Image (cartoon, rainbow, N blue to C red; front, side):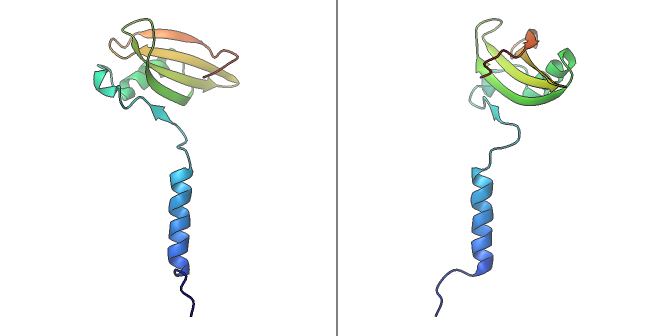
Length: 105
């Protein structure tokens, strides 16, 4: 007598494992700092995309020198160029808007 789980259960388990191990298309880090930000991520995205229209490929909320010390950092791709745009998480001011360097983080 075969004691292995039914095929359907094995498929569900495999699908769940695949989803658990697949990183999201756009990773956002900074949940731990979000409570300190006066500007939310949605508003920061709007500000960043106004400063440099394109497609956001990476975003994070981090502590960094300049401004209030807490900033959203966005990588925005347009064509072949990826631009780094930093938005102060307290004031909403654009702190950085420059092509990504040769050693992206």
